[in-house]
Structures are given as structure tokens and as C-alpha cells.
Image: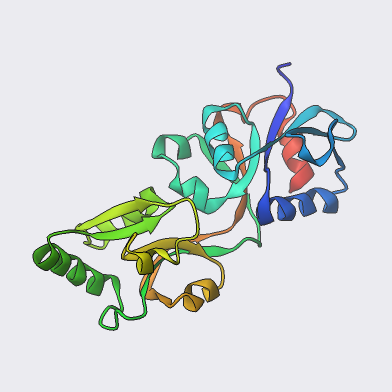
Length: 227
């Protein structure tokens, strides 16, 4: 049906819990045929709305291709996506939760490295003396690459990560990390520290709309349910 509004919600984690609180606060009761594990749901009394539970990164992708009309995800994941996807999405609202920074963190033992400019010097030392580039472990390759290039750091290699990165500098997997951090405590407790000018991006939870579908019937009425 053409008039169905498809809304994406993260399928797990803290982000999902926080977004579900919004539905509760707006007295919107979520239902699904097969209980909590169901990946498709609806809102009681709103027959034209379909809820799809997806990975937070996938929500951004699906908003970009128009298969979702509205979606809840993180600003960091929006900015990490390819530019041609970003330009097809609008931020409807930024929420005051899930606030975190994407940061560059280095081992405490690198006492001479305090800023990104110092990191640039280390990068050239690695290249000249060790004949290799410093390795940066990250789940955010686009944002990390663009940030380092913008600061004049070019001699580095990105290492893709899907797990906890704090151990990478101590196992030989990477020399430093780029990671999302809400308080910095996990980074500190793993003998790492954030560079003084090492904040790449300030992130928070957001409500998004696919530009492709912004003129769809009932889209404005649906947005008003959450704002």
C-alpha cells in the first residue's frame, strides 16, 4: 500500500531503549504479532504505520534509498554514511540523549603526543624509521579519514574493527583508535587518552526523514506524533 508510513527503530541496545521511551511518553503503544523478537511491528490504532526494527546503521541506508520514510538513529551514523546518502536525508529533530563524541585516543605511554599536530610528527617518524604507517582502528572510517586529512595527517592506515577497540594498541592490531565515547571512562580505564583536539564529531540521537518521501500522504501528521 502506497500510503503506509515505514518507520525504522534500532533493533537492539541502549538506543532502542531510549527511543521506545519516546513512544511510551507519547502514549503510542507498539505491538507485534510474534512478541519482542519480531522485526516488524505497528502502533496500536495507527493502521497506516509500519514499524521496522533494523540495525541503527541500516536505518540510515534505508532512509537514503527511500524504503524507510522516517527513522530513529544516531547522528554519528548519519555523518559516517556516504555523502550521496546524507544528501537524501533530513534531520527532523535532535534529542537530548545518547550524547557521545567520536574521538582519537592514543596510548598513555605516548607522552610527547598531546595534539593532532604531534600525531602528524609521530606518523612521519613511523614512516621514516619503521617504514610503515601508523594504524588507526575504527568503526568510522569515513569520518576518521576526513578528520585526519583535514588536520594534515596523511601517513596512516585504517584498521576496520567490529568489536571493542581499546585493546588494539596493546595487541599489535593498531597503534591508536578512533571510537565513540560518552564519558571517556572506558578509554581512560584502558590506559588510553583522548588527544586535546581529538574530537572528530559530537553525536546524539536523532529523528530523520527520507527527502524522497517527505510529500507522502500523512507524513506530516506522523511526524507530529513524535515532536
